[in-house]
Length: 406
Ligand SMILES: Cc1cc2nc3c(=O)[nH]c(=O)nc-3n(C[C@H](O)[C@H](O)[C@H](O)COP(=O)(O)OP(=O)(O)OC[C@H]3O[C@@H](n4cnc5c(N)ncnc54)[C@H](O)[C@@H]3O)c2cc1C
Image (cartoon, rainbow, N blue to C red; front, side, top):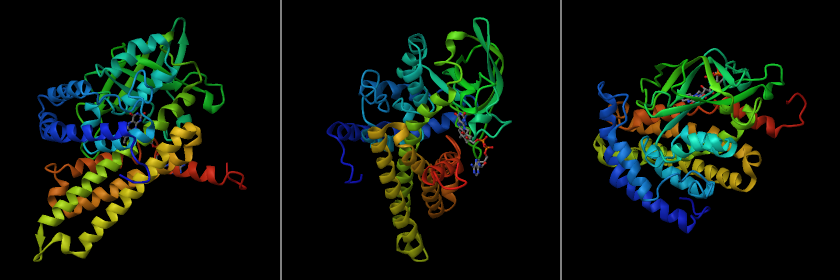
């Protein structure tokens, strides 16, 4: 960890306990969880070990660490949380164990900041306890969803209800048997200006008209049982009090949701890349080719050294963005959050790709964690907005006032 951002005593204590928990319980469980997901008989069910580890983590106080609210969560700053998320990010199964997994974290923040007391009682409480899971349904197959003003699903008032209509996809978590609620984005005010046209509404998973059509695959990985799904909402009727804050407020909520969420992904990617680098080093030390360990070959040395540089660069930028978020809020930290969202997934893809290369055929196989890690990192160049959208927004912010820049 960088000396520039020393850990607070509380964060240091949590970090060492998290590391011990990861080593003793999470990493040894990975193979069993993968075997559970590979078996067609159990594929879409929750591995019992996950629930057992959640209970254990909660009992040890390693729970809801992402939530800065001291009454409901751990009360850590983003800067304190960053190194903890890095530790969790080393394993794709770990964030759930500590109730710090997307999209539930972002959804919990939405409910905390924008939810009514009734919405909080019904959904936030069980989510904070890890009893249910949730999904966030914004992206649609029919429109370029990187420009969210295009979102075309509708949320229409009808008497005491709203009627939700539309087709979504890449709805992460929708296939999870514990998924109890969706936050759905759709058009509530078609005649308003583009950023006041949309609303967000809570739709119970079991509401008539909700159909989880199929799981989608990222390079063949479906991330069962959690999954990323195509979902249809066919004239789904929900009581009017399921709307979050009000009609036309969808963009306001989306901004609040994605500020911390984006850097949580980046913090975890630093951890995933770090684990790939450690695997690379181990491989280079022990694998002998052309009479010497790989570590003695210049090209392997370059792969290792460059990876260390790039991880440390991204780590520092992540910590800087977290510090700005704490100090200036989401608006003030917008450029820093954008920068790390551009940098971290690319860095992780580059590092994991080098690790795959150094592992030879093993690296591409499911006998190693690297192939799945690459798929997860690559997806994050798209999820929460593609690189290009963040690059365009950053450039726009930097050139404001220049002729032709909007
Ligand atoms: C694994 C995974 C999980 C996801 N989870 C969720 C989820 O839980 N909920 C949810 O709602 N969505 C989720 N998404 C969807 C994701 O957020 C969208 O795929 C993303 O926002 C892009 O939208 P799109 O696919 O419609 O691409 P489009 O909007 O069609 O964009 C396609 C491409 O156009 C280019 N482009 C766009 N804008 C510009 C620009 N300004 N300049 C230059 N080029 C540009 C980019 O290369 C972009 O990738 C997930 C995606 C993945 C892969």
